[in-house]
Image (cartoon, rainbow, N blue to C red; front, side, top):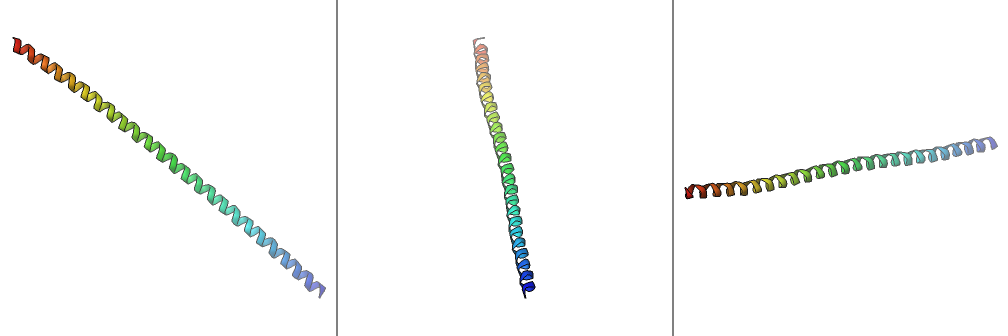
Amino acid sequence: MKGELSDRDRTIAELQKNIKLSRHRETDNEVSAYADECLRLRTLLEQTLINNDSLYQQQNNVALHEEAINVNGVRLQEAINAHEERLAVE
């Protein structure tokens, strides 16, 4: 009877140890999955920020080119007007 009780106690102790080990492994797996997801989201955020910055730079470049075109258009119109005045004087 004592032998059966000690065997049962050992079995219970092993099961409790296995349960604790299983919980520990599950927790480790959850922490690892969480860290992986954080890294994935951080990478996506960084890529989005880089893409947005690139888009902003492109828009800024377009605005600068448009401004240069407008300035050159005004200068061209002034040159045409001056040329037409010279032709009218002659």
